[in-house]
Image (cartoon, rainbow, N blue to C red; front, side):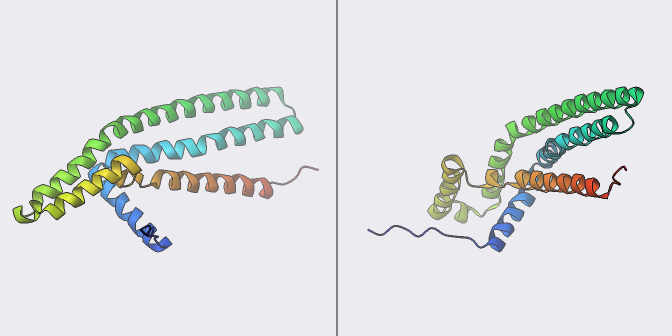
Length: 177
């Protein structure tokens, strides 16, 4: 007995399928997409705020060593860190609230599709087999609309952008004499 071949997608097909899945999820539950994007952006960029503010403190220590300016920078750093941490936690709570109901919303997508079909097509055993296969893939192997990884892609983009912004700002600044 021969093993079935694994179907491989080209990069173009994978992008097209993920983009289609993203659009379907956004049409179905736009609040979940928005909350997830907000959380991902805050999660990716929050460390860079601390790094940049710490660099300002180090720059002041290496330069003028003004105690008033150092106190001000430390207070700003603590305030921004507290604010961004609380904002990230609130966005995470918002994301988790939407994630808790997203499974039911995706199930309603299947129900709506079944209700929009002609009775003969909906009653066809092949249709039930396909629906069963979709549900098995979603439940057991983690495939389906839940496997669309737009959040990880977005987080990587913002982390790369933040790293580039910090690197460019490092090399653009004048070196003190």
